[in-house]
Length: 573
Image (cartoon, rainbow, N blue to C red; front, side, top):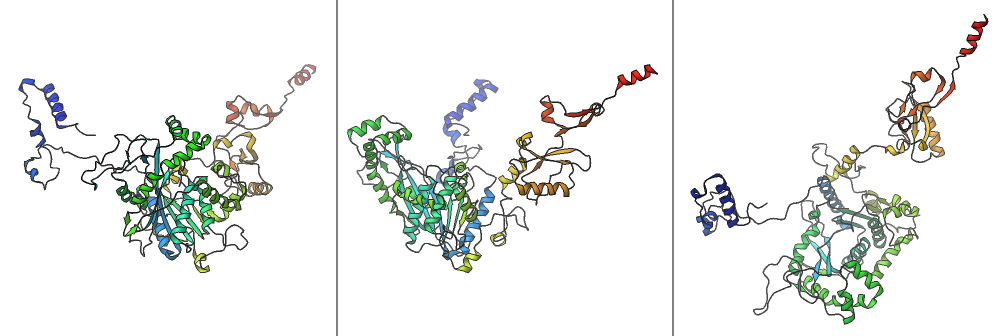
């Protein structure tokens, strides 16, 4: 937070503080210029630096917007990205390495030239040409720049990946919104354009992990499978940055070059027909514009045409940009027909899939899709051909047999044996059968979560009983779902073979029932009091939930004392 708004404000703050502590008439207030010359030096090599004394420990400073939010997985994701780059180097001649990202929206004025929103620097104009734009940028129309960066893979991990071919498009934010299936469609078109008929058999994708690229989303997984099938890749690896760390994506560095083409540019849409202008003026949000366009085809057509000239202007400026002597290339955004055709290839796996129903909950119920993902995918997130000749979905392998046989999943970072604060190198982790067990957020989640939710401990989910061999207490065995015939047999064998003790798991971790059947807690059952044991032959322990609900311990077979008969015999005697 700044100490003061200005030198005048600083002078007033100090004056007020002195007047509160001393007699106002005795306080001598210096001039603002004298105060300024007591600051610390901003630039010590200038001529004016001689006039500064540096007596005050304050200085002028411009706010730098480079503060980044931290995340526990930052180090883990950095190691994973290094693994990906070393994997690409290992199979260099067979890999296409793509980094992708979307830039912030470029505003389009409505009747007045509006700035693109890029921080302006000095630009070259004619002597008599004014360079002005509207003093606000609140517009309803805008374009979304998308960048696809084909990285040249170096010979060594120490060399830079920041070179290659850049593809850029400007999508209509209203009718061409960013989505996972749109991105993958455009990826495929760019790959086909860049590699022509020589598409590499392995594709590596690196994105910032936004909603359109987050690999845990069902819509993203379906889109990646479509890309995998269309490109006939032997393997596809999709990776994202750690949350809040999109700056690690090499495509982010392309944005600084793209800004050069947008600096000093002011855009305005073309005039539409009077009817469309009237209808458009009544609409405020993107949802309202899209809803109106569904019932008014003329409005949708006019809105698309009125920004065509703007897209052409930006296309021309973009293709003049250069990265390491390699010119940028513009590509047309995918339209609805192209996206639908791209999605249809997934019907080879499951004909019930729909492009509008790709949530994880819906996809989890698609048996054929889940079977394909089980045999071809790894949920972190890669897709690989199964290599089976009997497979009717993925085509034959492109890679040489020895290369494909050596091709393994990208490893998860594992701690180094030499230094636990660092992760092992790629050569050590590759082909070692790693898991995500060392991901920090997963470790925290596992440490703070129960192995089994307490909601499973209900009477409707009791499947069997077991007795503690030390104390003789009877415990309930629970499972979320009804046991299959095989599980029932395995459960009975475990009951007969294992000596169960209160507080321990029902079976060891390597048993198939470890995550299926669970034993109640130590304090689950309440033992009957001694007074009841003297009155009944059989007593059954009651759980704490039933006791708290007011239910009594179940007893059977009351012990009769026959006191009346004893009295009669005594009287008769």
